[in-house]
Length: 162
Ligand SMILES: [Zn+2]
Ligand SMILES: [Zn+2]
Image (cartoon, protein in one colour):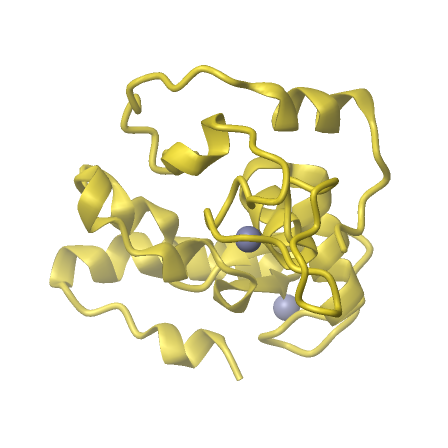
């Protein structure tokens, strides 16, 4: 179940019906074909049927709840923050301190998906497991070290997660 409240922005996010060629923006990966074909009983995210508890097809829904959660995590920043808050409660994953100004960080930086072809995208980059809460200070240090280490070809992400 998505955590952020239903809003007009959600409506917009869920609303597009026409598939356009992906512009290569690695922060907003292309949506699957099933997203654009709204068929009751079939999930717009994973493309498989939506079943009721008794295994009959649910003809009212067009999303699995888990799929809607996963989808909004990628395309809706408010939902991303809500899910991270729900899991981490603002506690920095590096120094362990609570911070009001916590920031969302991709453990494996999304920028590594830059220039990757649509069919070669690594979706693990976009999952909640690849997101962590960092305080501003740790986030800055991590970002800086990524820039430095990238040049040397050795970024140690493990250092940055539990
Ligand atoms: Zn689904
Ligand atoms: Zn910290």
